[in-house]
Length: 497
Ligand SMILES: Cc1cc2nc3c(=O)[nH]c(=O)nc-3n(C[C@H](O)[C@H](O)[C@H](O)COP(=O)(O)O)c2cc1C
Ligand code: SF4
Image (tube, rainbow, N blue to C red):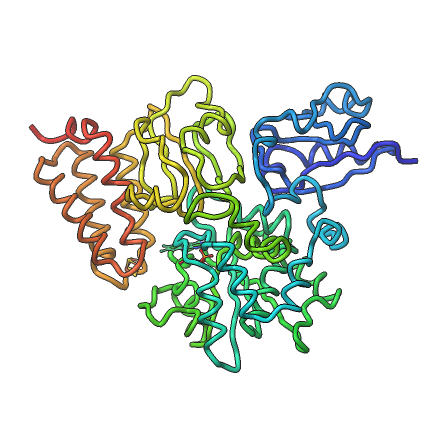
């Protein structure tokens, strides 16, 4: 006889802090039913156990084995809505998180799942694309390119085969929202791929998944299989197969053309553009390469309408952004909010300030190629225009906060060395420039550099920015140059007298 249903996340991050141990202990309780959901992204509160009570959902946070008897007796806990980190968000791409079981197709359906696809199937392709244009959805992988424009290019290119490739390489340090989508709401990604395939006439789909994400790949494989069994991959009179392909740990393979090379079985080297993949991509066929989050946002846009999406956010940054906050903050985790809030407010309101005992030094937004923001620059609104005006990028929405113990010269060296390691080697500014940049920073560290070497570093950065073939070389100087700009004394103090 079951008296109590308890909800626990099955996400990699919650498992890393012991949620499986709690689940194992609870399994032995004969009157308990366990429902494994996806994490709500409030990682600082995991392991979390949730329970429906007459007044709504109650949650117990940072649960240990000692807390279980009290939870089973219904003692303690707080109302879910009383947790500011969660209550202050605007969730739609992550609206199922913490609620549904990731692989329960019926649960996905009851929460509007496949409503977007149903709409797309009875809408002319150009009208679907028009809806995306109204929505103002821009790619969430980093380049922020308007999605409608890619779909239109692929639709208008006549070919017997076309592909949908989901970029699930998620290489930016401190980002994990793609992993969360794949582990926590995989049918949303399948639905987005099907809408894309139907609209542009694609014949096959691939998910290129980061090698370090075995659970996400497993979840996607299972979801594709379940969707296939349910007949959902039957599209426009033919089957739309979806394959999950694992990467091999190369950062540059997240760049869309290097990714396509890798998918074709070759070394991940960047291709010159044009032609763009939407016209000539995988095996020279029209290919939509899109980030996981971009594709996972499409179903809600179709279901609710482009105007609804456009009503959120700012002028040229419509909808919501999934910020992934990490580093030396009190409350690391995933936050979905409309574009436009300042970086300062995000760090205060959601990240809860600095972890105890540490003082803020800088925030890096946009992964290893992102600029550094000192305290004086935190009032920047989180939207594409403001970031681009500041010479910065939002990238994939990762925010890493550094404390005052951080050595900025070492940080700058680390990022240059990262580019030197990850460069695909195709173009000289990046292949050679990143090695020379690393050497110059090592010279600063060794106390052998002069002011002229810092000028040389800055000139080298300008060359890399303007002459590199892709954003790896083109953006690599930004963390270095913003470190020098905002923390000059750390570099100057180490120069040769
Ligand atoms: C070095 C490098 C690494 C990248 N890594 C990723 C990645 O891991 N995931 C991703 O979606 N996009 C990544 N991108 C961006 C892709 O090239 C491409 O813009 C993106 O997949 C397009 O999808 P979107 O329009 O949905 O953003 C990377 C770009 C560069 C230059
Ligand atoms: S910038 Fe670097 S990664 Fe990009 S094409 Fe040139 S060598 Fe390759």
